[in-house]
Structure formats: structure tokens, C-alpha cells
Length: 269
Image 1 (cartoon, rainbow, N blue to C red):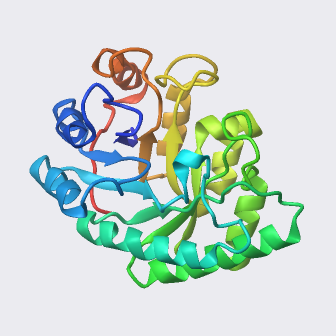
Image 2: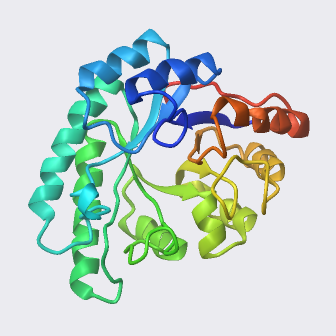
């Protein structure tokens, strides 16, 4: 079974952020991810990871003014200098946490706007090359317009074509199964076709974004398919628990019954 990473931005919200590391470890996870670490000192996060023997699987590069509704600046013309400064900030946290993959949000823009497309290509290229010198993969993730209206990167074909065209060795696809199903469906065929460029996978039920192994998709089949395809990366549990996080972790036992012991193991890779 896949190596599951608890998403601490969505799971374990019954605890304060820095206390979620202990909660995740106590629940059996040995890898975590989250949206952003920047409200906390990098040393504080690194200490929690070390204390509870957790691997940092992923976090996002700075997104601009999140509270004002910004969801990244990569495709926003005129924000390149801000993006560069954000990458430098993220690298400080990457050094402290040992993370090996960072996600760049595109922001709100139209893919029909040539300036936005040019800004995005420039941002992705520069960021990938900058992170590559630190041994870190850059991930780009298509996000559906129902959850994030107006988001620039809202198409898996565009994302994979860009990755293949730029041909940067550390530029990878963040394949969120929830977003894929809403945007295009055909999850399994897409996983098979896109596996060579996939650097991280995330899961949640569709359409409610709750615990896996429920609702629209047969997640057990998807997990078995990831094994068959030889995927050895992390699967981020980016879902909103229906109730208390611990009460909803039975889906891991359901995954176990379907295809072997579910792995919550993490390793630095």
C-alpha cells in the first residue's frame, strides 16, 4: 500500500498546529505535509519533526496574500520579484525540515492571457532551476474551478505538456485525485499515462473531500493500481475529516482489508 502522509492543515485540527505533529505520530503516521509553515519559526517545525521521527513530505511555496484571496503569484504578471523572494524564504524552511518537494501555486489568471502564460512559464522555469540546485523537486498541481474559481492551472493536460516541454529533471506533477476526478475523471488511465512525471499524489473522497474509501471512487482499487505501477512516493491525505480526525481513521483499516497493510511509513526520498 502507499506511504500515507497526514496533511496537518486539514487533519488533526482539534490540536494547535505545532501539537498536530505529535497527534499524527501517535496515530501511526511517520510522514506529514501541510499547506504553509511560514507563521512558525523553521526551528520549531524542525524540532517537532525530529522529536516525533516524522518526515516532511511536502509544503507549498508562499502564495502571496492568502487572507486577501490570493492563491499564488506565479501566473500573475508583475509579481516575479515577489515570487523570487518567496522561494528564498521557502528554502530556509526546506533546509530546516529536510523536505524534498515544494508545490508552486499558480494564482488566479486566465490561460487565454499570453502575459499570464509567459509569467507562469518564467516562474516555473526559474523556480525549478533554483530548487534543483538544492536537491528539491518543484511540483505543479492542477486545481478544480469549483473549489478555486479562476485558478490558472486548472487542466492536467496543460500541466503535463508544460512539464514535458520544459524538460527540467526536478519539475514534477502533483496529482491530486480529488481535483482530477472533478476536472476530468478517468483517474486510473491518467495515473498510468502520467506516472513518469508524477512527483506526489493526494487523496480525498469525491465529492465531499472527506475520508478516502467512501463516496464516488473505489480508493482501494486506486491504491492497488499505484502499487502495480510501482509508485513509491508519498500519498498526502488532504481531506477534511467528517468529525474528529481520530474517529475517521478507520479508512486505513479498510485499505488494509482491500490490499494489504496500509503504510503510513515515511522516508527521506
